[in-house]
Length: 379
Image 1: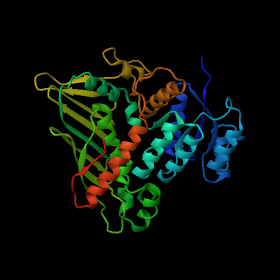
Image 2: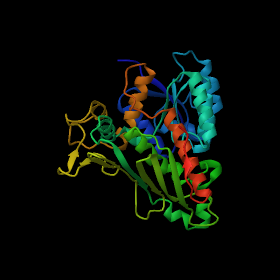
Image 3: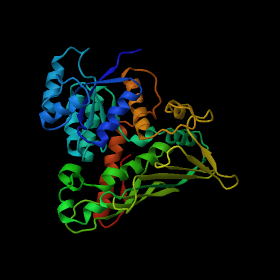
Image 4: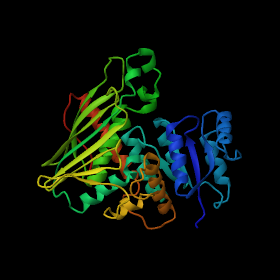
């Protein structure tokens, strides 16, 4: 078996949900070994956390700059090969840029940066570096999402004419109505989260799901945001009309104040022959609808699924898999790319997806700010 890929972690310490998700995902397919990290801005907390999860502390660095400096002193065969960036949004760009400039592969949480301008700068740095860059739009790792992509690519829906994606959560609802609480949450602080909360955090997932599954590019949009309170600078709810062509239109609905909702990401793609429906909270079911046949249900692990879907399934049919497995599929694809093995382009989101995401986020903010007007995205 090939040697494990040497992985560094930035952020994700303590009780971070995203931290444990990445660590478990990295271990599931036995491709990675965590050899260095900065888990927390406070060095002692990083050290304590490393001990807690049983990682050697000799390469737990006091800060990010020290990690890069000290790792570059090591022989190439010992040095960290790829770093996962799990920090708040405002740190993604400087960290990713420095890692790329020093030749490290990068796995980055979304959004990739806080501005479209930064995303384009990062794109140029990536071209020069010639390394692997993956963006963790986790939901692209679900087998049934991958099945959806392959069925659409094979023309099973025919010409697509309507897309509908929503992402509803309710977690900010208990926070937003209290002035003190809403002032203390980093996702509602534009200096840390960027110019958008709802669209920047979850609406961009719905956008990515449309482009990932259909292969079409959204060309223009019209957005309407809800801030709920005049002193709140960040959107917590929004609706976006989208155009992907003269006769291909749809909607993205996103909310962080949808009372009682948990993680309600769902996507519906309608074509001239059939439609496909998938919901994140029931990830093992892909529904095919048509006008002249009963509803068909596709499930993971069955021989009728595509090669890409089956490659992302670890257990026999009937054994539920979930979010850890989805993220693990992205890490698996990255491992193949780092090792220069053959892999499907759908195995992990790339720099292109990150740039498109920031273009989408800024376009929605511009559309809303200008009074709900149509705004074009770049090609």
